[in-house]
Image (cartoon, rainbow, N blue to C red; front, top):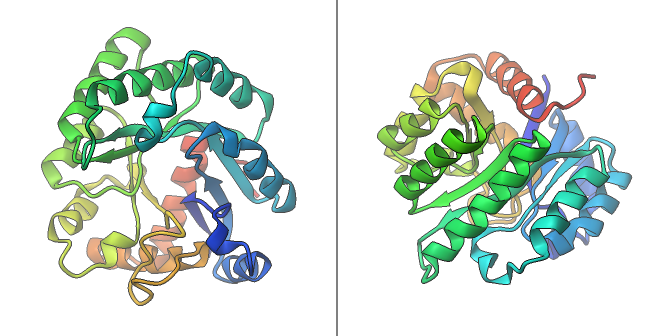
Length: 260
């Protein structure tokens, strides 16, 4: 059984002391490819070095919405240059909107729009972070679709209700579920996981954050994506092997990952 973890941050300090052991565990769990997200473009050399170490690692470049105040005039061209500089770059992101505690919603929209334009210019998918901002994200993506054509991408670590989920499905996006889907009280998210069409479904860990049950509250790592897969399969009343095959094929389709 093969799995793809479509969202990791293994460059974070908490994973460095035993990263080789972490890798051995993801290999043992059947994780054959990983997509490393990017919080800030200055992480790029570090993530690139990890991909040199681990050939199964592919990666993105972008600016997280919570870091939107770091945007400056030269950052868009820099993201474009970095994305075009390495064939292992498979996405722009993570980008998006996070209104949970934000005082800079308009600025976040501007920064997100500029990164969406880069992705469209390079024909790359986007990794979208969206927290407490589904309506605004939907509106922005609709605008972009009208001006740049359909935006390809994924709503990562999705936590929305079925109505919001349908908004992004209607826009052609993939929906990725993380360890949150294993939490017993995440009822809206469970309903969302049941309704996503098979050809739009992805799984991830978002490690080192949001470890799934039975590791909740501890450091997350890519091997735990099998817990996410199992929970989603149970919710959808599917065999785990079928869910794994579907989500692996979807990840390779969206991110144009090589098939082993």
